Length: 395
Image 1 (tube, rainbow, N blue to C red):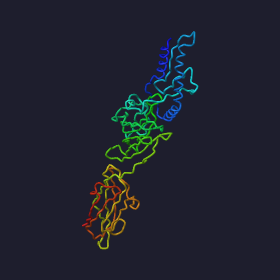
Image 2 (image 1 turned 120 degrees about the horizontal axis):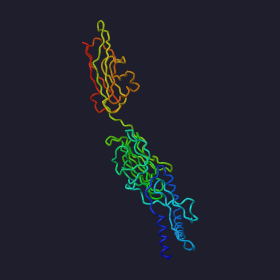
Image 3 (image 1 turned 180 degrees about the vertical axis):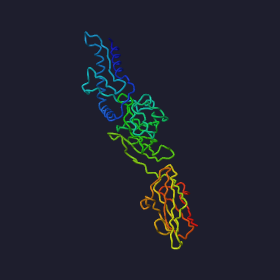
């Protein structure tokens, strides 16, 4: 065999060792192992590479039988891991390097951050959704084939945005993907490559919840992790937005900056007030020095789609009011819900309540006017139905 044949054999050995593998999927939660392996790889890569350069060509060369009289040439094969599931390490050489670890070294990753085309080319591991929208139907998780657009329906999952950021504290760029489920939910998932360059899921960075039902946008955080723009409603025209920061802390992903809750919104509520004709009791004998009992019923209705706060009725009229005092404004003690304890309970959307009060008036009065107003802690978009003028007529 000529020197040219030797070179061909060496080239073939290197070619079989470095044969590329297909894409693979790592299950969620493997970020710590992947980061640890990658850091060990950077420490040992130089030593291992030197060992491979020295050992494998010699092994290939010796495998031909040259220098071993009486033996026929034998074929050279480099064993590589399977292309599905967890990648298996290359088989150790028959003549291992003295510096090699007991298990085969992991090659350094390559290929850069994961692209949209790679992320949607085959099923990837999607973490479980803690909240799948108001429908109560679960979104797809586990091994999922992602759509390349956010326009998905039902349990399907699509990609809204991709951003490159340091997502595991190793100063290298990984891929943060904002995913959306057709039921109305989002989550941010960290993706990287494994040691063989295949797509691997690092974990869930943040996901929507009932208290934070929308992730509107994401961006890379300068110090690692992501900044997520979140909202308290999925209705674009009616929501509060906040920026919250999330990053890897060495053990898990968690929030590292921004607000942790939304301010309670004071949505306008339309409470309407109406009054029925008062009912005057009889008076026996002359009216002088006599008092007449009168009862009046007010109806309060919540005309909004939002629940109301507690409310009060304010009474004005020159008469003995329900508390027995004469004249002046009076905050009515609603039955069962005294005004001094905060007024009547709030009303559900569309709910109404009737409130009946009794009071006394001079029995000789045959006509008298009163005003009553409703007051609540919420802004009212229609103040025209918050006030009533009503009359007592006995003649």
